[in-house]
Image (tube, rainbow, N blue to C red; front, top):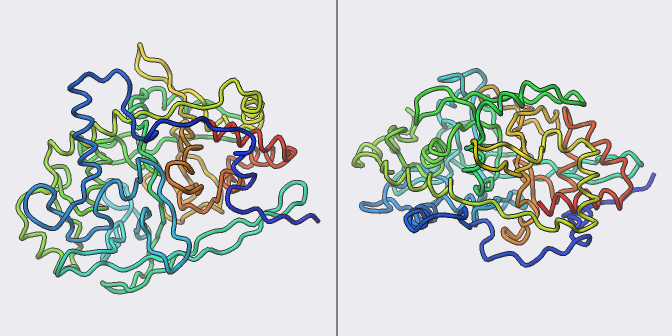
Length: 431
């Protein structure tokens, strides 16, 4: 048996097969074309709020906590791009967090919060409030054998909790997740809901059966189709803003006015009661949401290159485009978008399961992530890690973790000669 240990980008993320042209400054931070002067001003205002470091104090920028993970939105979405996992157990999470719940369903059919720690581990607290603890990742090797007998060393995370401030985490369901890219979200939000229902109802080859999540929207106060998040557990960008503000920064809003303190966290509750009103004004919520709606996805690179075009055919022939479908429709009068996603949930197998349901998404279910801009991750975010917990060191490893509904497509990929696998990965990296 041949034995090869692939590291980092596997096939070098196929970078040797294509030369990416020089990208514009901040390729993940450009507004959609055609904004008028007022639109550009609103975009700049929202960007300032997205990048603002919050503090525990009065006045603008105050209201952080009492419990929180980071000081700003951009900390988990660096340069509007992809967060990364710690390299080992001694490194703190910087652009990653851990969702928590207990077995069973909570309010509106969502996750059931842990009684002492809620739905997310908040590692830090403001003065006088103890943080909830530390989450540490250890990486364990996993050997995967390709169709030709070659062995590939993958890795999977082992999550450990340390320095817990509010008692043991018994019976907890947990899911470690890196911050996902935020560009192009307004275009995904504009995909007509009827089109998503039609996609979910359309029979697909290889036993693929995409499903929609249905989640509680705290802004409209109704159940709605989920589009955003690793498990499509958020319905709209306004909901994303208020949920992340509360969960990650401890900022309350009109939609979510209760602080992120559980009944057992008395110092947190006392501190929250001392604060005036909500922390994030309705105007600030609108401005951050407008910024996310107007962030453009970077244009594809390499179209017309023969390697890229061969890779496109390999991508389609392998069956990758069944879920990572090229085009999604927009409202009437607007051109379709090339996001390479169907925005649906798919069972990706036991290897990627986190053991934690999220509304209609089971432990093995994940939303198809868009591929646009993915090849610029090493340039913008200075790493090449993918999937919900950053376990994949390069696109090659990311493909090898696909199982469940994606097993047939993965096996076709594995059976390709190495040069053809490189062409497929070069195409993905060019989107």
